[in-house]
Length: 163
Image 1 (tube, rainbow, N blue to C red):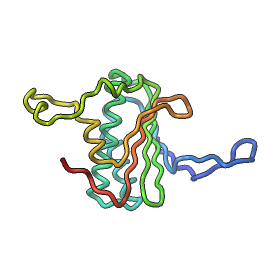
Image 2: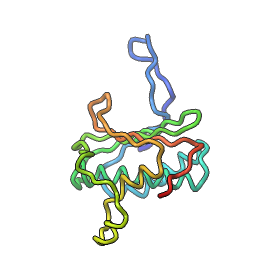
Image 3: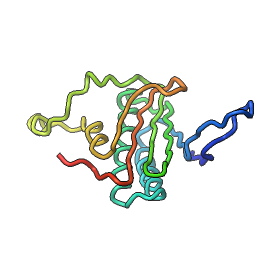
């Protein structure tokens, strides 16, 4: 499932190298793979210079983003595909979660309010909040392939945000 690739490859025409992630992971959109996804993300972060505690948080953010794809973009379908690209830079780690499901509508997602959350006895619904607390950057959009994408970036120098 995991495939390691080189940083740049020459295109078919042999003219211009194209960027590729250092590692790409493809797997079915089944929740039974979430533990593996979190573990791969954690281990990859550790192998690229993140402290163990920070790597665990990065694994949590990837798990949350992947869960959102399964539950919301794919509406629970376990037969679709998710692809994660891990691309370490000199001072950061970039992670893309790619899928061909429904795009996220950020306008429909309320800001996280811990008091309201507790008062309503809610469970779930904290994924994006957790991702934004752990990562320096969380963006959504459409990748060049036309697939939906969640891009998360974490600098080796930053620490998780505290509220």
